Length: 96
Image 1 (cartoon, rainbow, N blue to C red):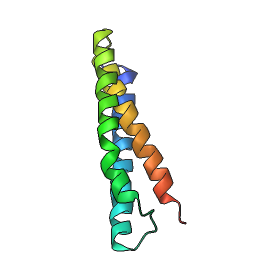
Image 2 (cartoon, rainbow, N blue to C red; image 1 turned 180 degrees about the vertical axis):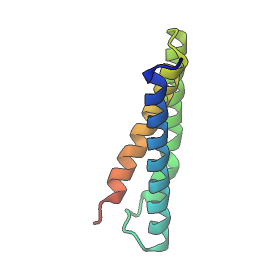
Image 3 (cartoon, rainbow, N blue to C red; image 1 turned 45 degrees about the horizontal axis):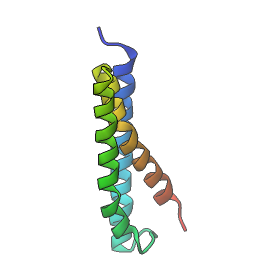
Image 4 (cartoon, rainbow, N blue to C red; image 1 turned 120 degrees about the horizontal axis):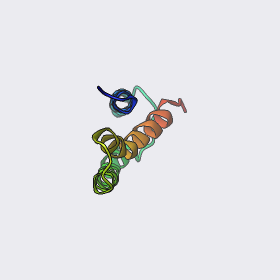
């Protein structure tokens, strides 16, 4: 039987995916001139991925080495990426 941790991780992953889709939408609309974004947004969206995925990998590896359960390993991997998508979605959703 699965514990609450699996459900929390699943909900967190779904939230991150919805935020990521919103971020992509805002950025594409910005590229087409339909949504106000900073001129540096294209550079930013390219440069943020490497550090976020490196932090996710580091968190997941640390959780595995510590002997955490699979749901906690997934949650450790999701935390840096989810934080980045959440902050991007909040920032880009504000009209300037």
